[in-house]
Image (cartoon, rainbow, N blue to C red; front, top):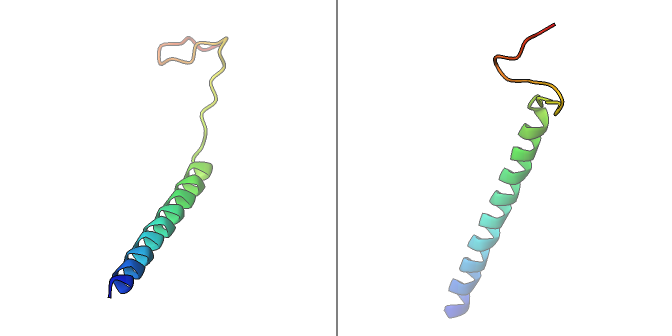
Length: 52
């Protein structure tokens, strides 16, 4: 009987790990689709920076 509960626990842990891996992969995909803002170090890129 104890082996049954241990196997259920192992299945639950494996399922949780699989769900976490899927969530991480999805977050990486979303991050890859998000536009990246490039800021150069030698220019002012703040809100009050002068243009031109």
